[in-house]
Length: 113
Image (cartoon, one colour):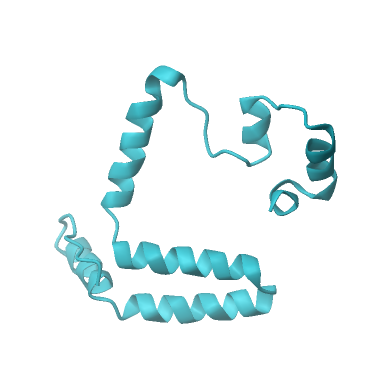
């Protein structure tokens, strides 16, 4: 997995040397999404959880499946799968609720279907 994230040469350097890297380097390599001070960690995590909980569980599941599929297959297969997952998303109750809520200028109430 590491070579996919940071490239072959950097992965070999990290694995062969076993050297620790700084949080800033991990961020620049794309190994972490963000760096926060320890005293803000809980608040940052809670904010991320709140964002995720405001989204449709069904759509998040399909998005995760689509991303994973794209990493496991050639580009053409991944793109084709993405189209299929998008079509499935458009048929969910949550997608309809999201569109309706947007038009009614209110927060959606997702049910995971």
